[in-house]
Image (cartoon, rainbow, N blue to C red; front, side):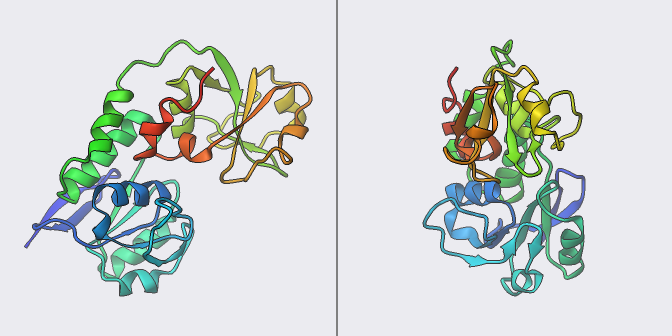
Amino acid sequence: MSRTLRDDLGHAVDLPDSGVCRVVSLVPSLTEAVAATTPGALVGATDWCTHPADLDVTRVRGTKNLDRAAIIELRPDLVIANKEENRELDVARLREAGIAVWVTDIETVPQALASMRRLLVEACAWPEPRWLTEAESLWSGDIPTPHTRVIVPIWRDPWMVVGHPTFTADLLARLGFEVVTAGVEGRYPHVDLEQLDAAGADLVLLPDEPYVFTEADGPEAFSRTATRLVNGRLITWYGPSLVEARGAIDD
């Protein structure tokens, strides 16, 4: 027997009445969320899924070059994906092969929390995870007046930065940081380095993913704007990391 629910994009997904027992996750944030909620259910994940550190499951390559044959061979009750991180073609091919795929769509912290609850508690039929209720409590307030204007590069040569609307920009706004892009529109626009450095931001936040900025690679590029290295997972991942992220970046 099965039941049918709709994922974040409105697609009907058939799920086992008894709950989901075998999951393949195609997104690092979702992998961490599943592992922190019902670790025994996780049977497959991408090469980019680095948390928890001791994760021991079958790897199905990267988020955008999936090994679909390996996923099908794992016989998952559910594959979980994300609109931004995974290719629509891969999702379609898995569904054509008879695999249930649940796609999330996340651009804000409230959206992330609601999406995680629907996925884990409603779709998978698992008990409510403690980390989720804690994260909901921590992030329940309104967006404050910004105290710091920040640039958040995610790549260099060419330089790319976090724009709007994105989960990272919304999360940082809730911590009092206004994400700016030197006036270039887009979710992850390419921006000339000189424009970034002259944009009048108070600070450049340099995360360690997807590009691995380090003390020797990144800060030296900015002569006018102060820089700070930050944990990329805490500003780009949704799921259990939200609990730690609440106090991760202070003014």
